[in-house]
Length: 225
Image 1 (cartoon, one colour):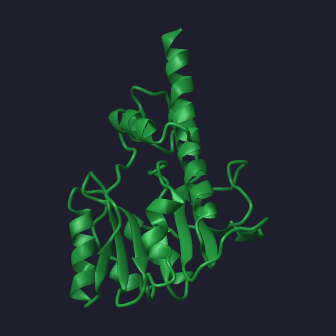
Image 2: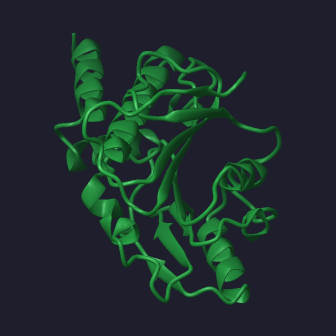
Image 3: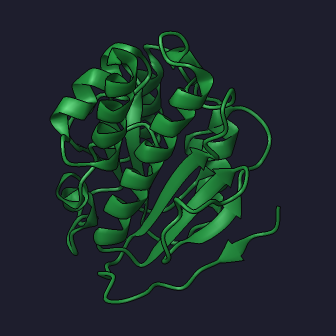
């Protein structure tokens, strides 16, 4: 897939940091497979699409120098204007995150599509004009032991490549890699990734006004009939 670029519309806020979202196209059977069961693949994909849309709109409202979507698959109607779209490389998640950072120069902050409760306020500490004063990395730990955000003042793929992903030690290993490189690391709040049906219910309750929560309520009503 060739890179497509859309230009920001309106008064999207600007700042010193590039924001990246790494995501999969929400195709049934290819996203959120751990939600099936209890959800059907089509329902899991609808939840994934809503989570991705919430994430993208939150990023669009946050101050950034550039906004990049690094995507496995093709863009759909869930993509708002204002993003550069780049294809993901092949390989493991560590390789794909490393390649995403290689697209950037200067301070960059990457998030995934699994935290639809994301808001500009949660990102704000890492996006302030002084966010990188005496700080070389920002880290958003996840409840499950992974991480939901990673920021680097100087994007270096080697800082991610080789870190074991999708384990309960991923966050600790990634943080260790940053500290061993001599970087000063600051933390963002701990968030819950949406991986299981229990996560869906809890995250929807945390962000009841978002697209993700609305989709979950719709699916619950269908099951109840």
